[in-house]
Structures are given as structure tokens and as C-alpha cells.
Length: 262
Image (cartoon, rainbow, N blue to C red):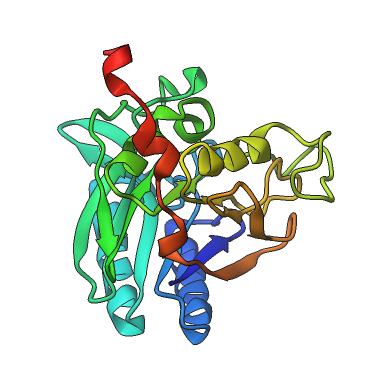
């Protein structure tokens, strides 16, 4: 199965984000990818970046999701699009899964918020398994994938061969310049990606923006904890990786004795 990870720049607006999304989907489709994932809160854009309030309205977000469905159908490619979304009067950080036919298969909420996000979003309370072309996968969003490995283990125990991890680390204004994925002096994020894969014996696909000073790169890690391919730091674009679902046995996740911790 070929999967694509998108590392876009921060969108200037919700329409700018949709334009970039369509361009990246077309590039992934040209490489025969079957699914593409975008970073956390991609539409309307990560909070605090100066987006107009109307971009976060129910109407704007619904219109954007409808457009994503059209793009998916036009390119016969499944799309994971992280969004802000209004549910019962509260704003959630979630990721929609759209099939290659343009059908909404469901969404995964961010359930474990970073303490700094308590005033941005409401925390979700459900987990879901998705399936594209016979391959089951889960989604964990940023902080919960980095700090709460249970979110990945749950998916692996439900038969997921792969967990997508849309996130955002870094800054466009200041920071360090990373040069080597997984280097011992890098922030811990890339080490956490390795652990989520090898401790569950599944693939882990982590997706970040292409900011000027990213603290992690988009990457696909195999079930042995080896990085198959990582995006270039600070450069917008996509990476496409061919994975073998048969290698994702979930062995270590399935051996975990849940009853000892109930």
C-alpha cells in the first residue's frame, strides 16, 4: 500500500489551505498513493496564526469539508484532513477520513489535550478504527500520540496495521535548525515516533507542517522502529512510502495484558 504524508506551509486562509491540499493530493495521486494525511488542525489552520474569524464558522468548515470530498473523488484518493469542528456548541480538534469515492468514513477527535490547549478545544472521548482498501488504521493527534501511547496501542489491538499521527511542532519565527532525523540532540518527538511503532509492531506515520523551524519532520516508521522515509526539514511537499501491511503484525500490542491494569 502506498501512503502519502503532506508537509504544507501554514495556510494563509481556509481557501489557501484548500488550494494547497488539492495540489498535494494531485501530486500524491500521480505517484499512485492510496491515502494522504495532512497535519493537525490544517483547516482552517492552526490556532493563533491570525486567521479571520469567519474561517472558523460552521458554514466555512462544512464548505471546506465538502470541497475535500470533491477532491478525494476527483483523484480517487482517500484523504485524512484534520480540522477544527463544531459539535453540540463546542469546538473540537479532529481528523476526518474521506474515502477515494468522496464519502466521509468518520472522524477521530483529539482526546488528550496538551494543558495549553484546554481553552482552545473541547476534549473528545471516543476512538475509531478506519479501513481503506482492506488496510485498517487508527489516528492519534499530536500530544496524545507523543505523550499517551495508549492511544496507539488501542488501535494496534483492534487490528490496525498503521496509525496516522497529524501534529504540529516548531515555529515560523524562531527555533533550532534540525539536520538529521532522529539525532540524539533533536527534541524527543522523533524518538516518540519510533517508540509508537516498535512497541506495537505496526507502522506509524507522523505528519507535521513545513515551518521554518520544525522540531520534527513528517516520517513513516516501520514496525521495527526504523524510519523508512522522512520529509526534508522546513521544505513544503509530500513524501510517498510503500508499506507492507503483512509486516505490521501488532504482535507486541496484542501480547499486552490489559487485565493487569483494569
